[in-house]
Amino acid sequence: MSKRKKKGLPFDRRGGQIVLRVEMLGSEAYLSLSPQAKVLMTLMHIHWRNYEPVAYGVREAQKKIPCCRKKAMNAFAELQKYGFIEMVDESLFNSRTQSRARTWKLTWLPYMDKFPTNDWEKAPAKINSTGLFPILPSGLQVSDEIPLKKHRESQVSKVIPLS
Image (cartoon, rainbow, N blue to C red; front, side, top):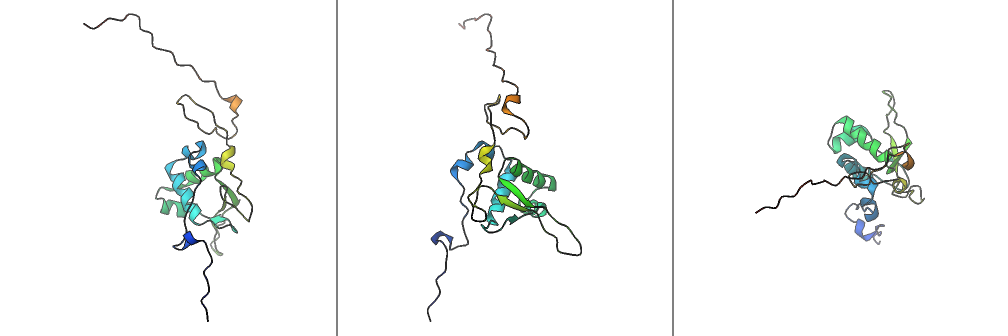
Protein backbone atom coordinates (compact mmCIF):
# COMPACT_ATOMS: atom_id res chain seq x y z
CA MET A 1 0.00 0.00 0.00
CA SER A 2 1.28 3.46 -0.88
CA LYS A 3 1.45 6.38 1.49
CA ARG A 4 -1.01 9.20 1.02
CA LYS A 5 0.45 12.49 -0.03
CA LYS A 6 -0.05 15.36 2.36
CA LYS A 7 -1.95 18.19 0.80
CA GLY A 8 -0.79 21.70 1.35
CA LEU A 9 1.69 24.21 0.18
CA PRO A 10 5.43 23.50 0.39
CA PHE A 11 6.05 26.34 2.88
CA ASP A 12 3.25 25.06 5.12
CA ARG A 13 5.04 21.95 6.45
CA ARG A 14 5.85 23.29 9.91
CA GLY A 15 2.42 24.52 10.88
CA GLY A 16 1.86 27.51 8.67
CA GLN A 17 3.09 31.01 8.09
CA ILE A 18 1.58 34.43 8.48
CA VAL A 19 2.04 36.68 5.48
CA LEU A 20 1.08 40.36 5.54
CA ARG A 21 1.02 42.76 2.60
CA VAL A 22 3.71 45.43 2.61
CA GLU A 23 1.11 47.93 1.39
CA MET A 24 -0.98 47.26 4.49
CA LEU A 25 1.99 47.52 6.86
CA GLY A 26 2.90 50.92 5.40
CA SER A 27 -0.64 52.29 5.39
CA GLU A 28 -1.72 55.18 7.59
CA ALA A 29 -4.37 52.96 9.18
CA TYR A 30 -1.83 50.34 10.31
CA LEU A 31 0.75 52.90 11.45
CA SER A 32 -1.83 54.65 13.63
CA LEU A 33 -2.69 51.43 15.54
CA SER A 34 -1.51 50.93 19.11
CA PRO A 35 1.04 48.16 19.80
CA GLN A 36 -1.68 46.06 21.47
CA ALA A 37 -3.90 46.29 18.37
CA LYS A 38 -1.01 45.22 16.12
CA VAL A 39 -0.32 42.18 18.31
CA LEU A 40 -4.03 41.32 18.43
CA MET A 41 -4.16 41.49 14.65
CA THR A 42 -1.40 38.86 14.43
CA LEU A 43 -3.03 36.66 17.09
CA MET A 44 -6.34 36.73 15.21
CA HIS A 45 -4.53 35.95 11.96
CA ILE A 46 -3.22 32.70 13.53
CA HIS A 47 -6.83 31.50 13.98
CA TRP A 48 -7.99 32.55 10.48
CA ARG A 49 -9.66 30.01 8.20
CA ASN A 50 -11.31 30.83 4.87
CA TYR A 51 -14.50 28.92 5.67
CA GLU A 52 -15.34 30.30 9.13
CA PRO A 53 -15.04 33.55 11.10
CA VAL A 54 -12.36 33.94 13.76
CA ALA A 55 -13.69 33.40 17.29
CA TYR A 56 -11.59 35.56 19.59
CA GLY A 57 -12.60 37.18 22.86
CA VAL A 58 -11.32 39.87 25.18
CA ARG A 59 -10.22 37.41 27.88
CA GLU A 60 -8.09 35.44 25.46
CA ALA A 61 -6.59 38.64 24.03
CA GLN A 62 -5.78 40.03 27.47
CA LYS A 63 -4.04 36.77 28.40
CA LYS A 64 -2.02 36.44 25.18
CA ILE A 65 -0.98 40.08 24.61
CA PRO A 66 -0.58 40.46 27.90
CA CYS A 67 -2.43 43.55 28.99
CA CYS A 68 -5.36 44.69 31.11
CA ARG A 69 -8.98 44.16 30.07
CA LYS A 70 -9.49 47.78 29.06
CA LYS A 71 -6.49 47.78 26.68
CA ALA A 72 -7.66 44.51 25.10
CA MET A 73 -11.13 45.99 24.55
CA ASN A 74 -9.58 49.13 23.08
CA ALA A 75 -7.45 47.02 20.72
CA PHE A 76 -10.60 45.34 19.34
CA ALA A 77 -12.28 48.74 19.01
CA GLU A 78 -9.27 50.19 17.15
CA LEU A 79 -9.11 47.30 14.68
CA GLN A 80 -12.83 47.65 14.06
CA LYS A 81 -12.65 51.45 13.72
CA TYR A 82 -9.82 51.35 11.17
CA GLY A 83 -11.48 48.59 9.13
CA PHE A 84 -9.16 45.65 9.83
CA ILE A 85 -11.87 43.47 11.40
CA GLU A 86 -15.64 43.25 11.13
CA MET A 87 -17.90 41.57 13.68
CA VAL A 88 -19.89 38.59 12.36
CA ASP A 89 -21.61 37.35 15.54
CA GLU A 90 -22.00 38.86 19.01
CA SER A 91 -20.74 36.94 22.06
CA LEU A 92 -23.08 34.88 24.19
CA PHE A 93 -22.68 34.09 27.87
CA ASN A 94 -24.91 31.51 29.45
CA SER A 95 -23.94 29.55 32.57
CA ARG A 96 -26.12 26.55 31.65
CA THR A 97 -25.11 26.19 28.04
CA GLN A 98 -21.80 26.72 26.37
CA SER A 99 -20.70 30.32 26.00
CA ARG A 100 -19.20 31.74 22.79
CA ALA A 101 -16.78 34.51 22.01
CA ARG A 102 -17.46 37.13 19.38
CA THR A 103 -16.62 36.07 15.86
CA TRP A 104 -14.76 38.31 13.47
CA LYS A 105 -14.06 38.60 9.76
CA LEU A 106 -10.52 39.74 8.94
CA THR A 107 -11.03 42.19 6.09
CA TRP A 108 -7.52 41.86 4.62
CA LEU A 109 -8.03 38.09 4.08
CA PRO A 110 -10.50 36.09 1.97
CA TYR A 111 -13.70 34.91 3.67
CA MET A 112 -16.10 32.22 2.41
CA ASP A 113 -14.19 32.04 -0.90
CA LYS A 114 -14.78 35.74 -1.55
CA PHE A 115 -12.08 38.32 -2.11
CA PRO A 116 -10.94 40.43 0.87
CA THR A 117 -12.87 43.67 1.30
CA ASN A 118 -9.78 45.63 2.49
CA ASP A 119 -11.87 48.14 4.42
CA TRP A 120 -8.68 49.56 5.96
CA GLU A 121 -7.85 51.13 2.57
CA LYS A 122 -11.09 53.13 2.51
CA ALA A 123 -10.42 55.14 5.68
CA PRO A 124 -9.87 58.84 4.86
CA ALA A 125 -6.69 60.58 5.99
CA LYS A 126 -5.49 64.15 6.13
CA ILE A 127 -2.22 65.78 7.16
CA ASN A 128 -2.30 67.28 10.63
CA SER A 129 0.06 69.81 12.20
CA THR A 130 2.63 67.13 13.10
CA GLY A 131 2.96 66.03 9.47
CA LEU A 132 1.46 62.61 10.14
CA PHE A 133 -1.53 61.12 8.34
CA PRO A 134 -4.00 60.06 11.05
CA ILE A 135 -7.32 58.41 10.31
CA LEU A 136 -10.24 60.70 11.02
CA PRO A 137 -12.66 59.61 13.76
CA SER A 138 -15.88 58.08 12.50
CA GLY A 139 -18.50 60.64 11.56
CA LEU A 140 -15.95 63.40 10.89
CA GLN A 141 -15.72 64.52 7.28
CA VAL A 142 -12.57 65.92 5.71
CA SER A 143 -14.38 69.22 5.08
CA ASP A 144 -15.32 69.43 8.80
CA GLU A 145 -11.71 69.52 9.95
CA ILE A 146 -10.22 72.85 11.00
CA PRO A 147 -7.66 74.13 8.47
CA LEU A 148 -4.01 74.00 9.46
CA LYS A 149 -2.33 77.10 10.81
CA LYS A 150 0.81 78.23 9.07
CA HIS A 151 3.90 78.34 11.24
CA ARG A 152 5.20 81.81 11.93
CA GLU A 153 8.84 82.29 11.21
CA SER A 154 10.76 83.60 14.16
CA GLN A 155 11.53 87.25 13.73
CA VAL A 156 14.89 88.48 14.81
CA SER A 157 14.91 92.17 15.58
CA LYS A 158 18.67 92.66 15.63
CA VAL A 159 21.57 90.43 14.77
CA ILE A 160 24.75 90.98 16.77
CA PRO A 161 27.89 89.52 15.19
CA LEU A 162 30.14 87.43 17.42
CA SER A 163 33.71 88.68 17.55
